[in-house]
Length: 552
Image (cartoon, rainbow, N blue to C red; front, side, top):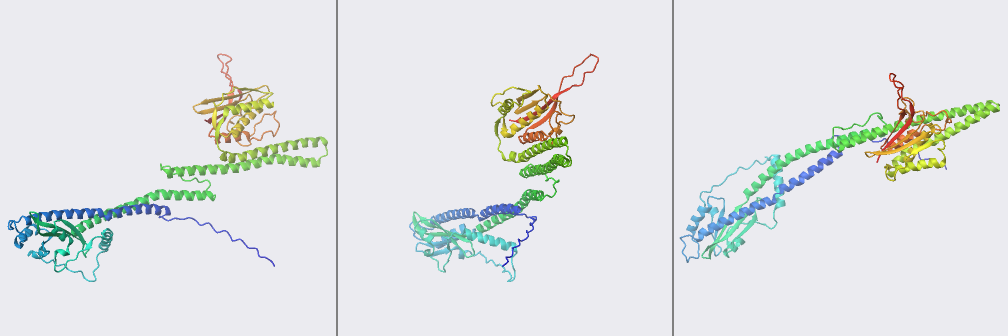
């Protein structure tokens, strides 16, 4: 039975991230600001403490009024010293005069609990207020409905569950009111009760006394409709301020989010284009006018992208150079092999074998140096830098040259430094490779019995390492060219293919990875005048100097 091979599904196209004006980041910023403002506004709109202070102040006012009126009733001149009851007519005159101009309701109870008088039914000047009812289909404006709902909801949240509803019986007596009973026993008491319309009724009962004898109880009552109106006006004012603050907060949130989300979005799109290989020559936009984290991020990403582009270009150029350099010995090898197949002359074949060996050595040298150069970037990026005594490192390398006999035909001039004098932060193996490459270069150009001078110095936190030779010097305008890959300007005495032309390029790459610099220059002899009337001779080149500067 043949098993069918499962065909893999084609890859799904990458979905492009698109955001409208209100990006997720903008929505989050707006939500955080609005929620914080809403919590603050809701706490202010609660106004429970403000309402409680107003009620307590009203209770205190009623208490003072009740004590003043009760004192006037007790000291009434129409009452004799031995009287145990309150006379109606004098009490009515006193209460009408003191309570009549106000909106306070006064009720006077006798010691037996009977109601003596009630200002609600005694004022002949009170008029009936007629209010027109709204039409059945008439709806209040939506603003009033919203404000009413907010006010009612907050009132319900702020209501005290201990407050009992106010109930007025047709035939009132002291037993209907606990504060009146307490007043008949000589204690001033205040109570708060709820009304059907949502307001509160405040009552204060105080004893009417004469020579500490209780003659009756006076109860003053007042509703809190004015307090409720004050609270409503305060809430309305706060709502207006809250609405204005909300609008300003939303505008500021949009502005803040746009200054953050839009640049980040643009940077994300540009980075995505770099990832896909689109617009390699186009650098990320730098928000140079911004002196904040977004500007720093844009500059860092732009610099990183430019570095990446340079690295890609360097890799492409390196690959092209490697291909070109490898083709030369391979072409020579192919020509030599083809020639050997067509000739029987032993002398020619011997020469061709020598050429083949040189080309093989050259290929081996090229491959080794190319492998080293290709691993260099990865090693420099992965390795951790640590303090390196560069002076002792150079001394060890010089002693190695002397011990191996590589400098029997040359003389080294080097002053041994003290330990710890020249310390840099870097990778010891790679810094040693810089010194080896520069010394190898100096040895190859210095004639026999010549001197190679090695110097170390330190100035203003910069360590300077220089290698001087006594060779022919640098070609004209080649101070920078010699650090190019595969550039080779070798002395004639040197065998062909010994050097690949990567040594100085690798040295510069290592030095720059350590935040240092390396440059080359010619050494000139001082100009000497032959006669007074003759111009001095042109200075002669006596060698080349390579200078490496590294920060401590």
